[in-house]
Length: 276
Image (cartoon, rainbow, N blue to C red):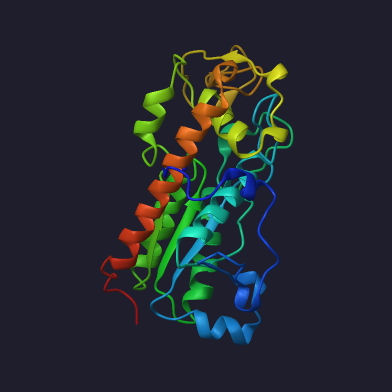
């Protein structure tokens, strides 16, 4: 899941928003935080014209020795704040669990079966669609999540509900190409570590960053040198030692910009014809 040239100073984001005001909005913020509303207030904002955003980021998934297990969750919540500042959306709570089969050899990593991950999103969207909205966007920070998210979208299309989601392999691809120096890698690597240095530098320990960029195997990461997956003793695939704050700024701002573009397209996209 990565685009913009700074909507607000990053320092302001690091200390959070001002206390919420009535209606689930903070001062200077366009979007509405669903969880801050009463059900009566929710009834007034969940209309057929509303775009609902659902952040998705693993709350416990390995990211090498230098990043924390909650890396994706923190990234999702950072991007959520940026979207709330810039877009007229209703922001649902962050989903902390989904489809992450590639990391289960590393303690602390969590994973839902494909069907469970698909159905969790379907059930959350169906619940909120029942009050009016027909357009939903999953602010996605994963790669393995893309297949079950497409399956969720397919189920919902048949019900007349439109679900789009962030493809982090594409949303900031040009920006990543601009800054990338590593030979290969996509996990806890140069790019992801750079993003976290920009978003939450206190959650990064560069003294523990490593390079592990073995050729890709079949399947997920593995700690077994004789395994069939991509071997990584540390859980890193790429070269985290090349990460810098400036690379992170370029990729994160590109990610935000790309997400906002996605939302603009979703807002005007034709709804599917399925449903009752």
